[in-house]
Image 1: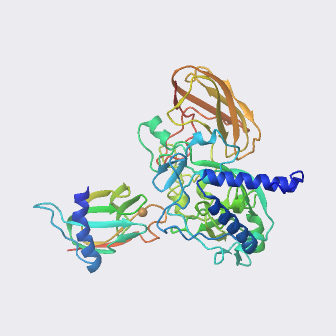
Image 2 (image 1 turned 90 degrees about the vertical axis):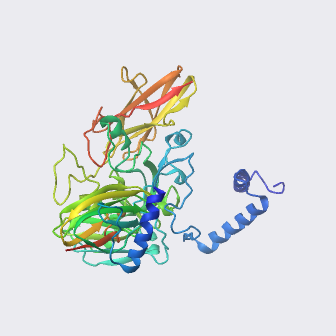
Image 3 (image 1 turned 30 degrees about the horizontal axis):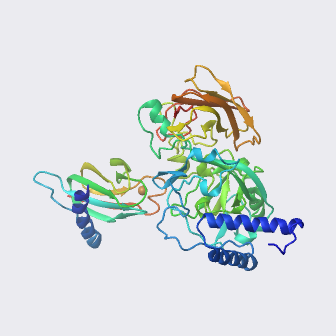
Length: 124
Length: 412
Ligand SMILES: [Cu+2]
């Protein structure tokens, strides 16, 4: 667990600073991964860009209460989700994404409105 | 002490109180010098501050809960604290503030009564307006004994019945408490904002980070005991319980009793929030979708019972008095039965006064406890004839587990 977070955090810190590209090859053939931090009540980074195809989402709850993760296409369809991520835990989900603009958020009541939302742009 | 006339009732009473408070302070490890400072400071506050509550600022704002929640009083469930039922065995009718369960959707809001305002607005009122804390305190007020219970109280028992966990905090039965709530009937405040006859829904909203809000129909909002509460068990409402003002919606699920209320929207239309469409709705094979809600929205709590015993704890063999409490969102409890032999036989428990509707009733039963492992059962029937069932239908979010609970104890 600790090791996984150690890998994720620098990527996210970099993303937070640049608010841009989130590509970290975890090995030959593995999909690029997007690292996200959830906290009360924020998503970091707020804006992520990836290439089309398979993407692995690595979502780390650094807050003190439960959160979850929903990836929604622009039409409102849920394309990936992680049910509950307890404080200190990391959730993972993989999705194959065509180009477009997606929304990532926590679907617990009020969390999205309070700031737990981010944009994912999938380029061609 | 010697110089005082202890035959004078008032002097005697004061002397006894001082002795008692000093003994309490000493027991708590406070020196005589600190005690005298404490008394002096307290007297000063009482004289200068009058009734205005002081806002504590020593707590780090990141703490989820302000009050101490030691493990001998509470089970920790993430950001929530469940009351341990055994602590009620030696207590009276109400749950003292320091033992009262805490269910927060985010963290306890830290508000200053001096700058706090209550805004009442929406299409259902003629004259939207604001109230200050002092204005609220100056309105007619009443005191009532009622329970507040989380809709998810008992959620962990869905797993015992169905083999998988329902979503949410795995409460046993300690997400309930009864207190004496003092406050202004919500009606008084709505009237002063020019409530329209066409008003349909009333939605209080909290000043917490998530702005938790949930509507109730106008009929419930106008009930005599639906209150805006500023005192709990004779004390200023504690921060964790909604200081400076919370809503009391008797019999309804906990989330309706909005804490840290700062705004009330009164509408001529039905109102919706995530707390009556996404959560606090019944979702499961037996329940239909109810757009825009995922399922029927919850309102009243159901009938439940709990023993004042540790969970999976020990009882000494011999004659003992088994105690517990039962409650219902629909009214008074009329009967409580207890089974000591896994529902082969049931005995009627003695109900002890007071038996207040939408609070609870205390009950007891003599038990000549023989060594062994037991699975105790209690089932209550309320005044409408609703008796706790053997099983309740599944719902994904694990609300309203009202079936008879199997309470494990070992007699040694
Ligand atoms: Cu969240």
